[in-house]
Every structure is written in structure tokens, then in C-alpha cells.
Length: 211
Image (cartoon, rainbow, N blue to C red; front, side):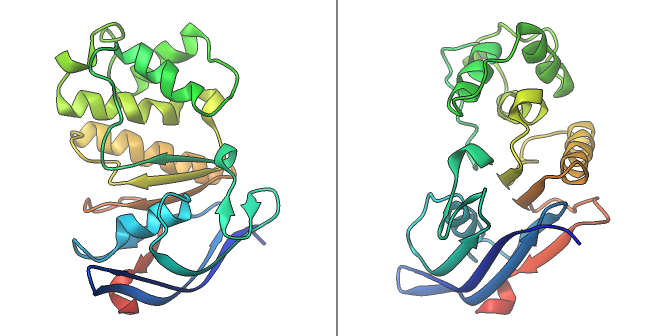
């Protein structure tokens, strides 16, 4: 039986006097890929940000298993959160951005070889020292996603908000493979996407069922 990482009870959120979701109950296990679904404005990003401890407009209780967090709060060292925005500094190069974003986790600094490998995996070979403001929107997105390919960044929980944005067909396929690989190797991936997800084992939580 898989290890239960999170239980959530009666999660409810309103914004601007509008109900997003209510009485949402969740149970996530190691080895799962979970897609949070719903139309624009249904609260998908709000929910992901609450799971990552970045939003306080969600009522209810979260119970992280010991080792991953303490009751309502997930241990920052146990997860990686990628939001809508790439979080990239335009005046820094691709490799500098990747190194800096990794350093925020207070983990061992990756080798130059590992940084090159991660950028190559997202199709940025040859762009390592190009300043981000000279890269396209899709390339900046890939700089952020390169964190998922760093060996040292294999924290157990990935929380990804629209990770396929601005990626081409090949990039989407590679990222789906990486997400599935992470789950199969003992991770948990919680994501939102408007892209048809090609991961057969993925499970869905539809926020429209909780309004």
C-alpha cells in the first residue's frame, strides 16, 4: 500500500464574495500524479498555493504526514512549487537563473555538469549563457522547468501550476515523461493544466464537484 502524504478535510475558499470550492476532501499518496481540474476561476491556483503554504484564503484542515510537514504546513524542503510565472530574472543567464532558483532550497549546489544536463533536457543546449531577456517566453519557461531535471532537486512533492504553458509538442511529451518518472520513483506530483494529460496513471480532482 502506498504511503499517504496528505489528508485534507472540508477545504473551502471564497474570493470577492464568490465561492470557489467548498467541503473539498483530499487524500494524496506517494507515487501519484494528481491533476486538479476546473474552468478558469474555479480555484485551481488558489488550491495549489494553499497546499504549498502560499495562500491563506482557504479554510479547512490539511494534515501532512510526519516527515513532510506539520499539520497545516508543508515543509519547504520537501516540495518544489512552480507557478504561472516563470520566476526568471531577465538580466541573468539561463544557467545563472537555474543555479539561483536551486539555491533557494538550501541544498547542495549542483555541479556545472548537472546544470548543463538539466538545461539540455529541456532543449536549451547552447543557450546556457544567454540572458533570459533575450530568450522567448517558451525558453524562459523551460529554464524554470529545468529544476525538475536536477538530480539534487528530487524533493518528493512537486506542485506545478500549468507547467506545459508555452511548450511545444516535444517539450510537453518530455515533461510528461519526467512527471511520470518522478511519481514512479517515489514522488508525488500535483498539477493543473489545460493540456490533455497523457499520463495513464494520473488521477483527477474536479473542483466543479465541490461548489
